[in-house]
Image 1 (cartoon, rainbow, N blue to C red):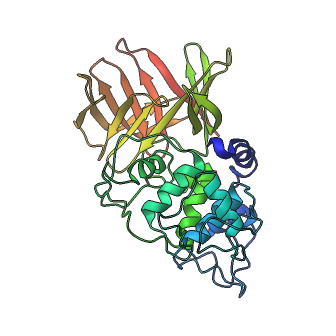
Image 2: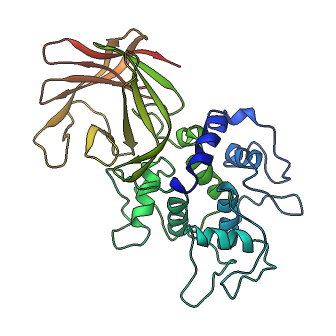
Image 3: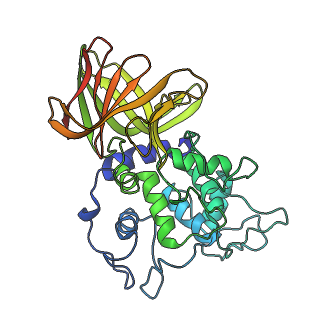
Length: 358
């Protein structure tokens, strides 16, 4: 997210923790609380990133055009939207989005066509949207899974996976992404909101999943003292690669920190350090005796040894936990809609246990 990291950092700090109900109602005649992605639309209206039409409508079901996408992305990135001449023969200076289009192209967020056109009125596909958003947010992470209809031969392959890694998209229940489908203004608003705020990432999270809640702060009691886990925007790079939204574990004793990622889809839950190997923590459905490899090329296995078991932590006693035992002898306990709550080493000693969630 290096193209506008400082803006996004301050934006996330100010708006990222606002609940969807905190905003006033929109003034669009065709948007109300029953509209899909209502709160996401309101969130972006409040941030002055999106706007409606002269007739007072937003048209959430209307497909987004390339010109509209450039305008919305440009406002989000605080680019220069002053109308001016562009290098495209179909985008004159008089075009409403000429300034944002020129700026977005200059920032290498969006590009034109070999014939010298930009085609501002052409509807944008989900695959092209992924490319634009991955460029705008400077996304580079990859999850441990892919989509059945997105192959490595596609230009959108990396960008689609990057959006999935950042919890901006989860795809469809059948494991597809549908890269050739068009994107509505409401859907585009949802993708933008997820890129900017953990609140909207969490709204798109797997229902009943075992990942940590991105809007909560977790404190675990460990041998060396309390460790606080917070999902936040991390500015900067690692080995020259940008960071961004991720989990940070901070040891209260000395302030030492570690950043890590969590990835969850309908098949599994995984975690890992940024730009490093990914461990499969759970395979779904989480049924008794299910077993899997922790890492793709390792001989380490994890097995679900108990379901609906009771586990006691300083935070509370859970009665619906699952127990996962690794080939190394460690046992971990996960609770739906909460995450990992306890870890025990082979000798039976508690290594980590949930102390609070706030």
